[in-house]
Image 1 (cartoon, rainbow over the protein chains, first blue to last red):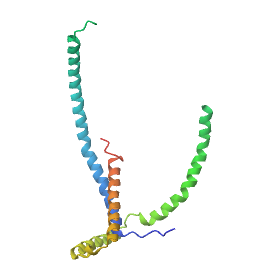
Image 2: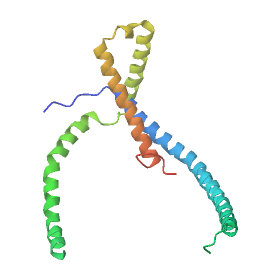
Image 3: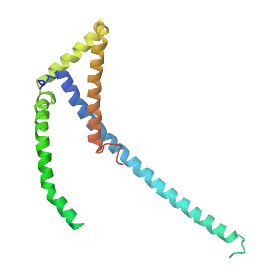
Image 4: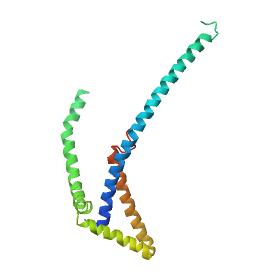
Length: 71
Length: 103
């Protein structure tokens, strides 16, 4: 087996500081994005309700106004 | 159907035993290398790292870094890429998922 190589301290420090920096960055970005996503979902819910109301009205109008001898 | 399930359940200890026998030597080799190569820097090594950064800065200023061979530059590029990958792994740990943010 090849003997394990001695890694330079610069690379070791760089690796583990990059790991720590990544953990901090990920946690912060997650905390920042979470309320934004909740807000978007809420807006989407409201718009969906409004759209469904309008669709129901449009459907009722269409059914009332269609002329067909099959009814 | 019930017999097939029973046979499968009876096989599980054998499978676990086989998995343990397979993985033990490989874990041993991994640990053998990781003990030396993957340990975090001890507090005594951090000043050496700072000296290393200073060496690189003086190398840039004196123009010595312009003399690196392509082979050395490629190797250094690979090392830098590996360090950047550790950052992305840290980000995956921080955001609690592998692909994307679970908002």
